[in-house]
Length: 224
Length: 171
Length: 224
Image 1: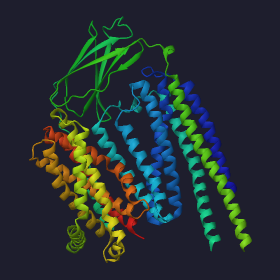
Image 2 (image 1 turned 90 degrees about the vertical axis):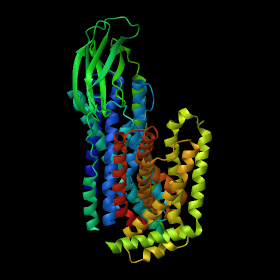
Image 3 (image 1 turned 90 degrees about the horizontal axis):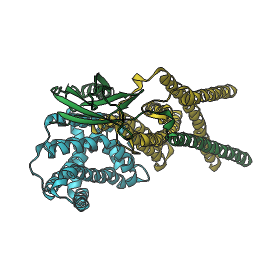
């Protein structure tokens, strides 16, 4: 079991590495420079995949939170916790690369447009998700509270987006539909790469979290 | 419990917002002027200008016109519903130049827009440092996070070993 | 059904009775809200030009802060006296507890708002009779109370009681704040019903979704 697991792990790592090289080639050499925005538009090829992975991570949190409250199996909680942490890291990157793109493009670091604002709200919600665990007195209680926030926070996403979209519309609408073939290819390869990165990170993080649980268990044994 | 889930689903379906906005009367007009950068020299007549409009993120329709000798153009008979967002783009050289989004406030029916075009030169791009910064930050953060995981894993393994030996000694 | 409603009402009357006896929460929150409005008056030089711009924001920021303050108390009080255990021993299902608590914090907030509104309108020199504002306030407060009751129960069970609530509560109620501020803005600047309708839709959607979701997950928050 262990050998098979590590083999799978290594295959994924190799695949991720190869894809990363390919997507680097695609996003810097193969794809033509977008004429309207110039070279800065290449940020798009990792900004969008980062946002996609962050959203995927929070979706995983939502599903595993429901499963945890339903089945009360700690493995779901571990998965949710690991996924939320990675989601927060990736959302942080989205919130950093977004302004770096906006600065030369719109002339300001930050605009309160729908997508930016929703990402910021999402980020704050999941920071609260991570904090609540440390606020709770017992492990199990923290897991339950976090799961509740994971569910409520995710259900809130479409409402936040809808309201912010009505409030401020500044961003040009998403242009994925009329992307040129080469750009779409680059974007898709890049999204795959980052999704594999997410899988690798989550495996790492889950084993770390179960390690922490193991230490706690052993400590308990020792104290007895 | 089961009943409350059913009620929830029914309510969810009921409360999908009735986003059927009444159409505004099509009397809006967008007037535009094409300016050329950096010094205003160059021919701005007979350029292709296209207007596209959106409701939310959905493209409704688009059509084109050509600029006059002085670089002006106009689109009329546009719906002035505040839900509509318009973009005007001008084709100049090999490039498309977009306006900022335009919406009609209530009561307004005329909007003017100015589009600045410049001869596109791929050698002139000085945004490279932004691209570099974004890319560097992405990798620094991801690398830092992996390193952090690695470090904690190492410490944990050490802790587990110590605890196990302690337990053995106690036995 | 009548039985269910009766149980909910019993909890509601219990809360209202204890509040009427002590008047601890209502009086302090009321004073707090008035102080916030007065401080805002100093912060923005309120001449007649800017009032229309800042008034909706001032009103809803005040309600948000006052709301957090009073929500914080709903479960902390129960917790301190050990009443929560007593409540949980009641032979009623957990969502009855939620509805009872939700209605009592809603009514408490509405009473506070009924006093704060006229004071606000007088201090900002606005017309006193605005029935549409009452509808927006009711919908907005319902949104606050629906999520607030859930998170207040959650926060009361953590170590960081008073800190935890705003951290979790604010990101989730962003849609309510945006929609309420925008609708209030339209009312104060004589907008039409039609312009307001999309904001009211968001408020109603938020209220309905979170009343149901909160009632469903409430049991996971208060179980020991």
